Amino acid sequence: MIRRPRLSLVLLLCAGLAAPALAQDGPPGGGAQDTAPWPTVGPGGPPKGATAPHAMVAAANPLAVQAGLKVLRAGGTAVDAAVAVQAVLGLVEPESSGLAGGAFMVFYDARTRDVTAYDGRETAPAGATPDMFMADGKPMPRGTAITSGRSTGAPGAIAMLAAAHKTHGRRPWSTLFGDAERLATDGFVVGQKLANAIASPFPQAKGEDATRYFTKADGSRYVAGDRLKNPAYAASVRAIAARGPDGLLKGEIAQAIVDRVHQGQYPGSLSLADMAAYQPRASEALCVVWKVRYRVCTARPPSGGSAVLHALLLLEKTDIGKRGPTDPLAWAQMAQAERLMYADRDVYVGDPAFTPVPTVGWLSSEYIAQRAAMIGPTMGPWPAAGKPPGAPVVGPDNTLEPGGTTHMVIVDRWGNAVSMTTTVESLFGSGRMTHGFFLNNQLTDFSFSPLQPDGAPAANAVAPGKRPRSAMAPVIVLDQNGRLVGALGSPGGPAIVSYNLKALIGVFDWGLPLQQAFDLPNMVARNNAYSSEISLYAPGVVEGMKGLGLTIREGSQENSGLHGVVVKNGQLTGAADRRREGIARGY
Image 1: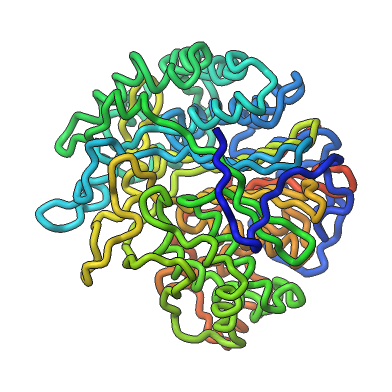
Image 2: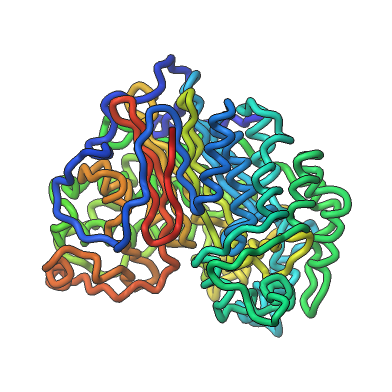
């Protein structure tokens, strides 16, 4: 059942409007033939986008895009295609997502113009304790925690997709896994991104399970261009195709997951009862009016969606839209908005079923005006967290959030749209495998320490049945009449909210075509540091930022993997981040 939470007037629930459902005017940029109003510099390589009149898939691997398009051409909906895309991504991009991972999704219904948010975040087992990542009174070393059995929560992505499919699917569930099964059986060509992950120094890639899977008969590791088969994965997707989520969460595969989690020095407490009890959440999306003409919708906490909305509303109080990406002050304004966003997000966002999250107060016009007043012509001191109305007494925590994550956007022939971010958390999750797939390490997205030095509780502390905080923030944008204008999202750990913000500002404030907005430099202003891509700025911008007190360092974040679709004049234009290997294709 979809819950109907109450919201203040600042938050609009996108419901009850009549068709047509595709915007005819669309965002200021976004057309395939548009000329950018600003000179820009971006990552190299050819654009990966496409324009089509009927349907579009933008995802992180061409094989997954092909699977999604096949479903759409066969009469499937955006949700049907998302199931097929996820099943293939879990095989060909296992460093980023998988059958045992979690996800957040927003779905736009073109007939009703409702936007529904789905929460498929993993849950901590009933045996979880607040100090489960403490050892000898101190937080565990992060690598130890990630590769331990304690890091794995009950997986939610497949159950979430099944719940959405029950309401919004047209094709039989059992027909949506054919490409994943075929590719696993016959083999797929290893891409450069997976090859880089296989050769990486991270402990998950060097563990016994990954070593067994990624080592060829001659003792060498798989590299780009090799063909990799995974018959165990084929058997797993056959089970899920036949039994739905029960094929994963109950029975033989579930028992194998539990057994693998209970092995090693720091075994987890995940049980068959925890697996069988998993339930995704569904609710109206969290939406705000932005720039008068748009409604921006995203997933609810514990996702990072509310942080993106907060930053958009802060920047709406500035003149960033008149400045463009060649103006150093525009980037300084964005950096200041990000600082404010992260300051509050890192304190208050957690699982609202356990700790009150002041979403309404955080997005209220009064609080936005108060915080936006701190954005000035030059960079001031780093801000502390504010006190939005309804904020509980909690302390900032030191949660670290590396990202093994991916994103997809799908629009079907009826104008329905999916924006979905999906993850196993870190690179190859915990590094533990069973039945052809890696297990998630999502529980290390909790704060390792339940209390701060001053004794204040962390909003993101571990608790049984709780969902850890996430930066995943799938976005759907509508016009004033509730018609689809665009959708986007990105992987990137805690930097996701910054990547999404940059892209939204690029398209809707600066009028850039979607691909050029994705090509803009990434900037992340968090934890007293400004991380960015120095070489991608237009000439003079970096020096100009220094003159405003904004000195950036070369990026230390996981890079972005933005994927999106915009609608203009009845045409769909898709784009994919040139920093990764995804594409957008339609028909």
